[in-house]
Length: 366
Image (cartoon, rainbow, N blue to C red; front, top):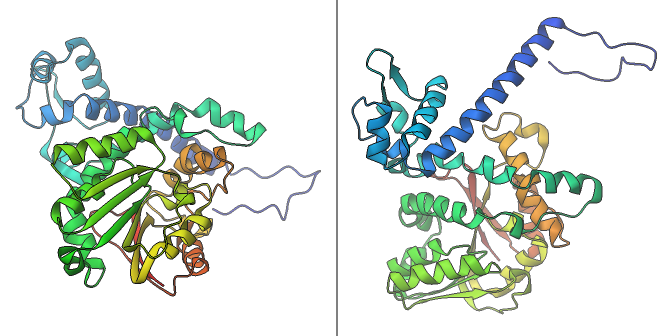
């Protein structure tokens, strides 16, 4: 139902459709109840209960707690909640619980990028800064990265799940000739590399190429360096640097940015610097949110509400905290294409891959 204000005047009360009002209220209560389930799913993922239960036959709370090496009383209460949410099945006669295989397929680490329980962690993570974001509604400005105590940890887990499943077999082939170039030896930079898993995966697969990752978060850079050292890589470098200040000129054959551009304080400047850093014939791979730049065109987006929420609670606000533009998560393909054109990219192709339904893959050349 679409409501307009055309027929309302200051002396006329709006007509209320009682059935529609009741339907809306019921939906809102469902949202409230399911938000509690979201927290239970996040907890279950973090303490390993879904992984444990996927290996067990129907078991009591004590047996499940023992198998997971957790406190039984907390496990029992958690089981009650996820049973109410129809996630776990329960037999009241034997007092046993089990996780159906059909549910485990979306809730365990074995599901890789299809593990929805992993995604649930974003809700409590964002809730940690709720009061700070509320203050920004009055004062403006934003909440900096330091307000998100577990952000890099979650992003690294998400990167591992997503890119282990598809980076080498699905993403690399998007760029014609890229595999051959990397095998022969290419210079590659990753902008906003975070914990560096993408860089390290590529460096391990293509030892003849040289890779550098840039990020301004020391915690993330240290994690990236530790992983590279653990893998024995000698063809990576991770540099603590504000990517808006990169001034490399025709240095790289390929530049990548995985879900990093929309968070930047000054994304236009970053894109222009990226274009300047590419060698003639070089390619920029920009992985960013799959959405429209227009709100009404995102109404049917399966994750539309989440995109605007994570933008307000993280992506937009961290940009504004740096005195930035506050581009936002749902900047969309129209704005992205215009900004790439403004940066000097003459040709852009947009792709999608099955292991990453939230993102579009922009392949841009000057």
